[in-house]
Amino acid sequence: MALNLADGTLLWLVLALLAGGLLTGFLAGLLGIGGGGILVPVLYDVFTFLDVPDDVRMQLVLGTSFAVIVPTAISSFRGHLKRGAVDMDVLRRLVPFVVAGVLVGIGLVSLVSGKELKWVWIVCAYLLALKMFFGREEWRLADDVPNNAAVRIAAFVIGVLSTLMSIGGGMFLVSMFTLCGWSILKAVATSSGFGPFIAVPGLIGYIWAGWGNPELPAASLGYVSLLGAAIIIPLSVLAAPLGVRVAHGLSRRKLELAFAVFLSLVATRLLMTLI
Image (tube, rainbow, N blue to C red; front, side, top):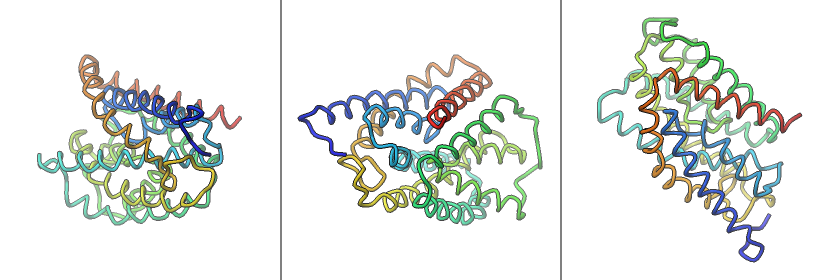
């Protein structure tokens, strides 16, 4: 698929990504969660609108999402680290298992189809939405994050799923940490430390998996739209404060429910493309 100025496709790509970047930033600020949870559905609509072939569309969405997540994840981790809110012991203990899961996920990306990647997103999004709909802060499985095989296996699975969904892992990790008795602030701060360890190898993996694919649009590096990432990164940062201002007028529970509805709608839309 070649993009050029003559048929106007490049212009449409830029305009669509401008809108997508602004929407991504606004929703990330409004709902208090960024990364792939917002980027994947936005980018999927953009690349659908631009008629990116279905065989590579979902992979291009996920790879481009990782390109945007990398600077966001690093910046977020540095900010929380400066405030001393990150539990470095748990981070050091679980990072090897998360990274191992990421490497397995990268291997799967080169083997599975776009249809199978959609199913991963659909199932996980519905499960996360159900947790947000019905979950309560008083739910506890432990008083602290235990150092046992179950948690290490969970960290590995989170690495795999985060790679296949192109998210920084926060949606899964925050849920796991809060179920282990942590405050939401400590859970968010520590989960931010895993973001770079998921996003950086994930980005490299999607570049490798899509290298040389002739169906990809111009200005792609493997399964990464360089133009898309370059446009979305600054605009999402610009629009996020507006979403934050709107969010401060709503309760945390309302925001959680809003994101649960959002995930449900995205999962339902992707499901309809498979029926």
